[in-house]
Length: 254
Image (spheres, helix red, strand yellow):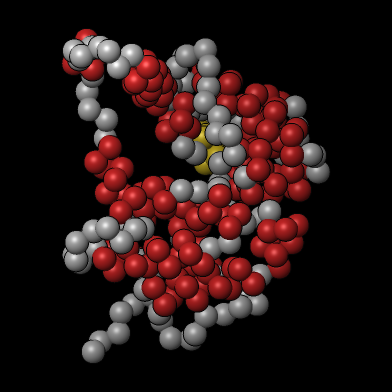
């Protein structure tokens, strides 16, 4: 048991996965979010990481009181596995014991900093500041810099230019559901040999922007930029829009 609380992102009710699940199950979006909370709370009480859950599809449907809920989770990629061995995607990142410790630490640090700013007459460093381990701000800055123009010329500038182009072209609703830090982090996870060229990824993105799935309901089905990259959606551009026939994912020889 990882604790008596769970962490939920504020954007969860508006995520495209929730919309897809609502359409698949024939229930409203708020009901989907409520069922997800019920499942996540149960998983938090039964495991530390959300992996290796010894349950069946039928039991997951019973926990959420919706027939087909497990299938809907699989459809949007929020659960993996089979009966007797299910894992909730990214559960440990948000609600594992380590993630909760990290979140609690961040709150304590933020509270301490706010208090320090409100008492400028204090000249000495507090015990909290002396014992506190440095936060990974430099790493976050490096990830953010991939999408900005504030890095010196390096071989990584090609990635920087590619991701900057994707961010600027991506629909606004997708950018609101993501962050440059998340985009850079997901891109770094992809093997260099599997990364497409800028031309290829832009062509595919244009296809997704033009497809009916993204156009309907004021683009509510558009997923966040980082999730689009994580799922490598350039490999399955909508069939009505086909990128140039030559393989743009491989660099050409000069």
